Length: 135
Image: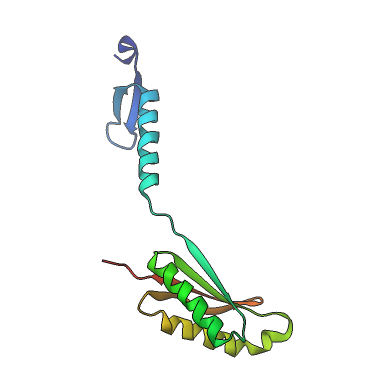
């Protein structure tokens, strides 16, 4: 039947008893499927991750300035990656870095929730904050 119509015989469900087949133009089917997948992909939301870098002895004014930027990023719907970078021997002040990140998390509580608590990775202490859903 497929040869008579100039179409292809496509196996839809091979595991069914009996197997399900359909007479169709296979190239056109692939094209439509690709088009559908592309449309779904374009509608998917892309996650933006913004970074904010602190030092272990970040001053109050600098902290407030960076907190303001963090607030703006979270309001815009981007994830926030806040990290304290320890240079040289400043790794001694791990506790100060952790206190700084926890303070930031507490200050940004109304805009986002902590996704990952502060964790030391090499010379960086990293924390992720995800934006809260806006209604």
